[in-house]
Image (tube, rainbow, N blue to C red):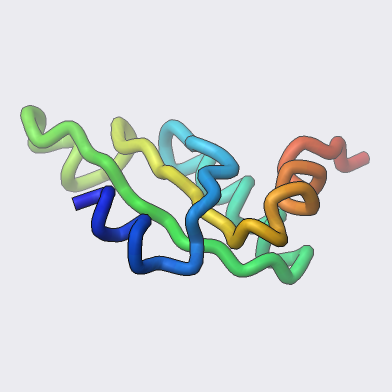
Length: 81
């Protein structure tokens, strides 16, 4: 299924993999603030009920357009003071 999504999506560059909600929200907030459009694929551990309900054990692959990849990397990894 990932292959089909990557084939037809305009968001093809995996810019970050976030583990857990807190990490995802931090990165998503930075990208939104910078005005960088992105798409997220959520991968869950289907063996545990808690992971599905709370998404604490889920991880998130965050994709951006090819032309936004460098700006997205800068925004994600910069330090805020």
